[in-house]
Length: 172
Ligand code: K1U
Ligand code: ZN
Image 1 (cartoon, rainbow, N blue to C red):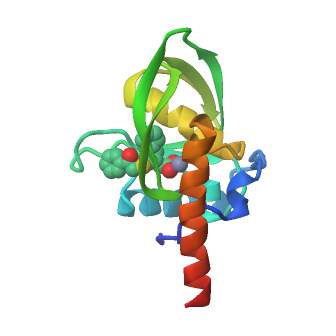
Image 2: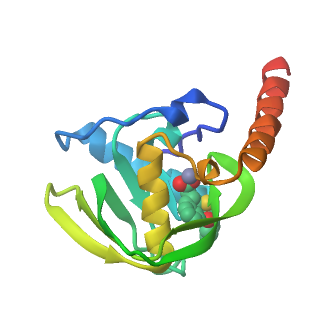
């Protein structure tokens, strides 16, 4: 297992639409291990493969409260199959946009379907943080970031800040 570097905005990789996973190979299992280790190290409650630069439709999540009782989830080709009309607002963060948090409105409850590492299709209901997180992660697979739901003014501000930081780093 290894901790992989995170892809940070304005890296254009974050705008790619990731490819479906067709076979559960040893590379796919290794990627799942590395994503979990990277997510726990960050720390985060979710991670999409593109956030470590791999454009495949894999997500890891763990929204459990305690470090002692980890509940790691690995989702291959996840999709939302139902979303509630009711919305809820949650303050979201993103490991690809460090130290920036904003409120985002999304469906309160969702049903999602995915393949697990055993190749089984699973369908699951979610509310609370799990519902928010799975929607945020599936957005990553489609090249969508939570800042896309904010006003243009807020999005432009955060993009400008990170573009300047990237320029400084490239020059350093
Ligand atoms: O996809 C990501 O960038 C991960 C992101 C997921 C997420 C968080 C909150 C709402 C929606 C989606 C994060 O995990 S940001 C870090 C974070 O929220 C957190 C970190 C440590 C403990 C608890 C939460
Ligand atoms: Zn994110």
